[in-house]
Image (tube, rainbow, N blue to C red; front, side, top):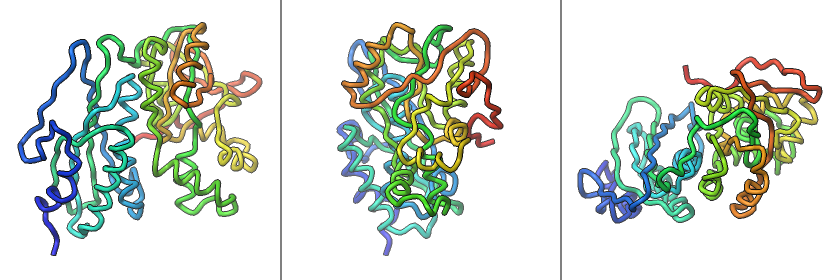
Length: 323
C-alpha cells in the first residue's frame, strides 16, 4: 500500500528540512537575513518529456532540478541557502520512485550546503512535473545582473559548451559509434549539470553582467545584450569543447555552431572589462573552474557568431524556446 501524500512527506522529505523548515509541519517556513545582505530567489520547473526523459533515474531528475536552480543563484553571484519544492506526480508513481528522488536531493544538499524549507505535493493526470524555488543571499550591492555589460568588455564562459545537447542526442540513440567513455560523459552532462556555485560569488566586483547558459550560449548572451543595450560577437573557434565534443566534431565540421545554440549546459556566461583578466583567472583558480574568453561586447544590438576569418556564421535559432 502506498504511503500517500503525507506519509511520503514525513518519511522522505521531512528529514531534508533545515531549521527554518520547522520539520515541514507548518504552513510556511521562517527565514532570517544577515545585516548587509539581500535574499536572492529563483524558480524553475521541469516536466517529464521536456526537461528530462521519462525513464531517467529519479535521483538524477531530483539533482538536475535542484542544480538548475542553484545555477541561477550562481549567475547572480549569490551563495545558495534553501529551497522549496512542489511536485505533481501521476498516480502510477510508486513510493520507491519518490524515495530515490528524495535520496538524490539529500545527496546534493550535502554537496551544496542547502536545506529544504517546504513546498507542496499534488497528483496529476499528465506527466510528472516539478517546480523548485531556490533561495540564496548576496552582499548588498554585489549582485551581478544581466544589465551591466559595456562596449569593450570581453565575453567569458566557464567549463565547456554543447555537452548537454550532445548528451541528449546520445540518450536518444545518436552517435552509436562514439567511444563509450565519451557517450557516458555526454549523457552525464545532460542528466547532471554542474552549477558553478563556487565561481559565481567570486566574480562579484569583477564581472559586469552574468547569466547561466540554460537555453543556449548565443540566446543567453542575447539576453545580456538586450538588457545592457549592447551587441556582442563570439568566436566559434574559441568555444571550449570537451574531449567528447571534439570527438564528435571530427565528423561534423559545423558542430561548434550547434554547440553555441543548444541548452542545458548551466555554465556561467559573463562579461568583464578588458583589464580584468588577472582577477578572472584568480577567481577561476580559487573556484577550481576553467574559464575561457570567447568574444567581445560592442556597440549596437544582437549577437553574431564569427568564423576564423571573421565572417558571420548563419544561425537559424539562437537557442531553445518553449513557445
